Length: 58
Image 1 (tube, one colour):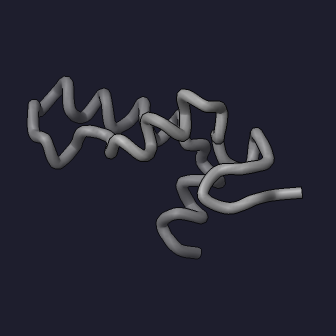
Image 2 (image 1 turned 90 degrees about the vertical axis):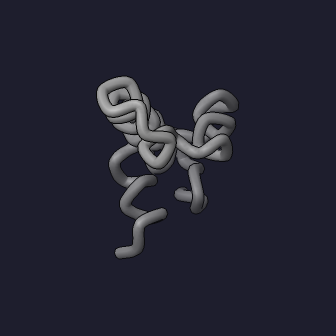
């Protein structure tokens, strides 16, 4: 399983929350969630739980 499939499995909203938490703690730009991830969460693409994330699920 690759990193994008794993992110879809965990839930993109959870991945974003972890990135935000790490960024707030360490203030390292490397830990901030990427803009594409933030956008996907905003429009409701949450991974397996919503049926679509980086991949589409039926």
